[in-house]
Structures are given as structure tokens and as C-alpha cells.
Image (cartoon, rainbow, N blue to C red; front, side, top):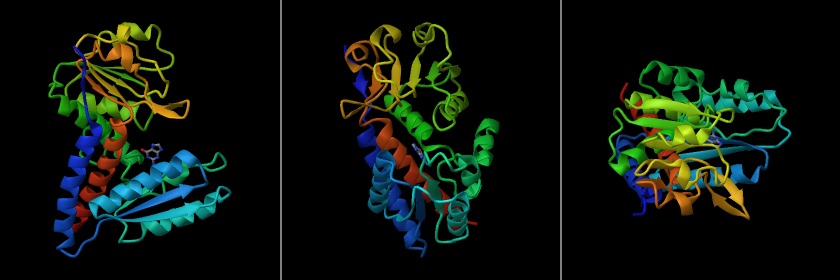
Length: 283
Ligand code: GUN
């Protein structure tokens, strides 16, 4: 038996179609959702990501603006631009593409994005709401991971979920969403001793490291749901953490890279933007 592939491209297209319908309903009420991207410097991967997100906005009928600042922008200039967008009522969501150049203070820059416009769910208020189980804006990749698990049809309640990676963007919020979905959650990271001991116990395995070939078939419980949220480049090709050749015959479900978490992250960004615009329209 070979794992059923969890088709993130197909699911993302479905989410975007639903988003477009809701955007059109909002537009009929005279409100156009708007999303602003702030890109600093010329990092090729960041430019590709922002372009992909812009294209998704086009598909969903969301107005997008990109503020592209030079590599040597000062902290003061960056914060001035962020505050301008924060005060612009036509901008419902804001996203500072990370990483930003090292001379800049990332935390201080992110703090200029008001929590109610923080489509990434990175603001301490939104991160704190997640910890406390208070409704709010959740991070896009973890939302996409949960959507892919739901696509598998496997019920989360009582399952042992193992998350590898403890980043604030993916690992930690994904672990909290799995906890909210009544999983028993283990978080592994770079200092975990005997990683395979934990992964073999996982009914749901989420790997968010960015190390090609990290997860091999002998580390996977037969029938498990394996979500590959890693991204790395090998010989110019985008690959995930999972060694597909050895994992596919063991896992029950597998989200591929590319075509798994990547498109889902972008689709959830569209949904988050629309949710913010709808909430503002209904107050
Ligand atoms: N860089 C890599 N992933 C992301 C993301 O999800 N959001 C932002 N803002 N930057 C990123």
C-alpha cells in the first residue's frame, strides 16, 4: 500500500474559490478587501513568495499593494512605511515578508503592524490569543496543516501528534492548534535525543525543519498522517523534510512538497485577509 497524497494544490484552489465568492459578496456591499505586502531588499526567495501571494490576491479578487523597500532602508523608514499602511483604512491586512536584512529590528518592525491587520498571526496579541484559546488571527502555515489533516479524514481527538520544529511561525503554533484539536502533542527540535523514538509513536507527524531527507520510512508509524512542512533546495529543486521513496510505502497519508503546505499557506492568507475585511464590515 502506498500513502494517499494530500493534494494541497487542489485544496488551496477550493479554498480560493470559496474566498472569491465571499469577496464578491463583500464587494456587492461596496467593500473591497485589501492586503499590503512589505518587502525589504532583493532576497530571491522572498520575491518569489510575494509574487505568488500577489497572484493569489488577483485570483481571489483581493486588492494587493506591494511596498518594496531597498536593502539599506533604515529602521525609521521601515517603521514609517508600516505605520502609513497601518493607518490606511483601505488596507485590511498587512504582511512583512521575512526574513528582513540583519541590520533591522524584526520584532520592532512587526510590532508596527496592528494585531487586527496582522494576517500572519505573528503579533504577540494574536500569538497570545492562540495560547489562551481565544479566537483570533492564526498563522497561515499551521492553518494549512490543520486543513490538510482534515482532508485526510483522520479524526484528531486523542491522537498522538508529533511536531518537529519549534519556530514561532510554524512549529509552535501548529502544536497549539493540534492541542486545540484534542491531540496529545509532543514537540521535537534540534536538541531532541533519539528523534525516531518519538516520530515512530506519531499518529500525526508534522515536520517543519527544512532539512531534506530528515524523515525516513523507518521513523514513521504504519498508517500515520505525515505532513511535510519543510522546505529546502537540493540541486535547484524544492524538496521537503520527508524522504518520499521510503515514507510513501509506510504512511497512510502524506502531504507532498511541492504541492502540499506551500499552496495551503497562501490560500489561508487569502482567507485571513477576507475574514478581517468581513469582521470590519460587520461591526
Ligand atoms: N517568510 C517565510 N514564510 C513566511 C510567512 O508565512 N510570512 C511572512 N511574513 N514571511 C515569511
